Length: 87
Picture 1 (cartoon, rainbow, N blue to C red):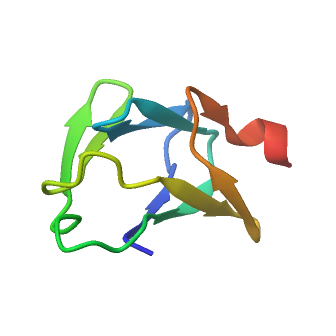
Picture 2 (tube, helix red, strand yellow; picture 1 turned 30 degrees about the horizontal axis):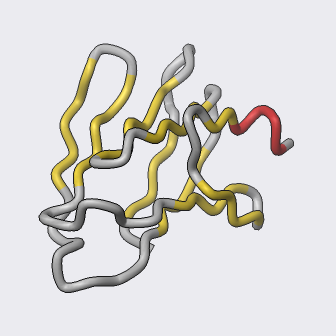
Protein backbone atom coordinates (compact mmCIF):
# COMPACT_ATOMS: atom_id res chain seq x y z
CA UNK A 1 0.00 0.00 0.00
CA UNK A 2 1.40 3.39 -0.98
CA UNK A 3 -1.45 5.62 0.15
CA UNK A 4 -4.96 5.92 1.53
CA UNK A 5 -7.46 8.35 0.07
CA UNK A 6 -10.95 9.25 1.25
CA UNK A 7 -13.48 11.48 -0.47
CA UNK A 8 -14.72 13.84 2.22
CA UNK A 9 -16.42 16.18 -0.27
CA UNK A 10 -20.03 16.31 -1.45
CA UNK A 11 -19.11 15.51 -5.08
CA UNK A 12 -16.99 12.95 -6.89
CA UNK A 13 -13.22 12.93 -6.45
CA UNK A 14 -10.95 11.54 -9.17
CA UNK A 15 -7.51 10.06 -8.59
CA UNK A 16 -5.50 10.58 -11.78
CA UNK A 17 -2.79 7.91 -11.73
CA UNK A 18 0.22 8.62 -13.92
CA UNK A 19 2.33 7.91 -16.02
CA UNK A 20 -0.03 5.40 -17.64
CA UNK A 21 -3.25 7.45 -17.54
CA UNK A 22 -5.67 5.66 -15.25
CA UNK A 23 -8.46 7.15 -13.16
CA UNK A 24 -10.27 6.04 -10.02
CA UNK A 25 -13.51 7.90 -9.26
CA UNK A 26 -14.59 8.05 -5.61
CA UNK A 27 -18.12 8.97 -4.56
CA UNK A 28 -18.65 10.96 -1.33
CA UNK A 29 -17.56 8.85 1.66
CA UNK A 30 -15.58 6.33 -0.44
CA UNK A 31 -12.13 5.38 0.85
CA UNK A 32 -9.44 3.39 -0.99
CA UNK A 33 -5.96 2.11 -0.40
CA UNK A 34 -3.71 2.79 -3.37
CA UNK A 35 -1.56 -0.21 -4.29
CA UNK A 36 1.41 -0.53 -6.64
CA UNK A 37 4.17 -3.01 -7.40
CA UNK A 38 7.15 -2.11 -5.19
CA UNK A 39 10.20 -0.96 -7.14
CA UNK A 40 13.21 1.21 -6.39
CA UNK A 41 11.70 3.96 -8.60
CA UNK A 42 8.20 4.05 -7.10
CA UNK A 43 8.57 6.30 -4.06
CA UNK A 44 8.24 9.05 -3.08
CA UNK A 45 4.89 9.74 -4.72
CA UNK A 46 4.04 13.23 -5.90
CA UNK A 47 0.41 14.13 -5.07
CA UNK A 48 -0.92 17.38 -6.51
CA UNK A 49 -4.44 18.75 -6.06
CA UNK A 50 -6.43 19.58 -9.21
CA UNK A 51 -9.92 21.01 -9.57
CA UNK A 52 -11.78 17.68 -9.42
CA UNK A 53 -9.31 15.45 -7.60
CA UNK A 54 -5.65 14.55 -7.25
CA UNK A 55 -2.84 13.84 -9.73
CA UNK A 56 -0.63 11.07 -8.38
CA UNK A 57 2.77 10.42 -9.93
CA UNK A 58 5.28 7.74 -9.04
CA UNK A 59 8.84 9.03 -8.52
CA UNK A 60 10.49 7.53 -11.64
CA UNK A 61 8.46 4.35 -12.28
CA UNK A 62 6.69 4.70 -15.63
CA UNK A 63 4.12 1.93 -15.02
CA UNK A 64 3.46 1.20 -11.33
CA UNK A 65 0.64 -1.30 -12.11
CA UNK A 66 -1.85 0.70 -10.04
CA UNK A 67 -4.58 -1.08 -8.10
CA UNK A 68 -6.93 0.04 -5.35
CA UNK A 69 -8.38 -1.88 -2.43
CA UNK A 70 -12.04 -0.92 -1.95
CA UNK A 71 -14.32 -2.69 0.53
CA UNK A 72 -11.94 -5.64 0.62
CA UNK A 73 -11.77 -5.99 -3.18
CA UNK A 74 -8.51 -5.45 -5.09
CA UNK A 75 -9.36 -3.65 -8.32
CA UNK A 76 -7.05 -2.90 -11.26
CA UNK A 77 -7.18 0.82 -12.04
CA UNK A 78 -8.50 1.56 -15.52
CA UNK A 79 -9.67 4.51 -17.53
CA UNK A 80 -11.91 5.16 -15.73
CA UNK A 81 -12.59 2.94 -12.72
CA UNK A 82 -15.85 3.97 -11.05
CA UNK A 83 -16.05 2.62 -7.51
CA UNK A 84 -19.84 2.83 -7.63
CA UNK A 85 -19.62 -0.21 -9.96
CA UNK A 86 -18.02 -2.25 -7.13
CA UNK A 87 -20.61 -1.73 -4.39
